[in-house]
Image 1 (cartoon, rainbow, N blue to C red):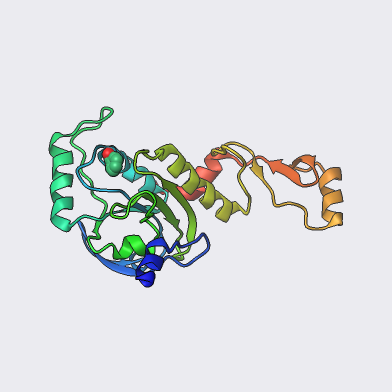
Image 2: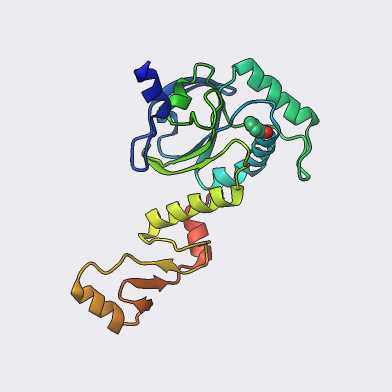
Length: 237
Ligand code: BEZ
């Protein structure tokens, strides 16, 4: 009994290897994360098929899928429902549902069947204080080496913000590519943060040399990073 409880609350962390699993999905069998080596993946869970908040989220993700693909990022959904329920729900979305001007939306990314909760438990998507049977709205950002780079959790009642999900992906890719950090509310075109001075000498240099840097103080220096350059490096045509 204790072991089951431990599994339910196990939570992968930022920096961990993404837990491995094999699954059946609406797009066929999947081995995770090996099927996605070399690509970013957003693995996200939702409470149940045929529910309104989840429907609005699936339509939004499907509508934005090309944008994520251009950023070398695949989408993978999960809920604790069976394959036939998933198929019926996705067909209903396409045939009947209109949301914020989106209609006739075909969900082409895979939706994992997880009726046994095996994957949901591995990824800490079951949070018993919220629900013992439905996954919360988790979002795992997994990098091309299969490492978890960011995690966002939302409760059952709260639909996700997709601008933030995309912004976080591009910000992490920018950090990787240009060895910088990104400040509050950063978007491409805003100044980026360079790593804090790690010695007294560098701290002094930062305050005396103005070359390309804007330093508020020795530990808080920013520089410009051209938006077009970022986008041309990160996005496929
Ligand atoms: C929904 O997706 O609409 C939903 C699911 C579970 C609880 C509350 C809302």
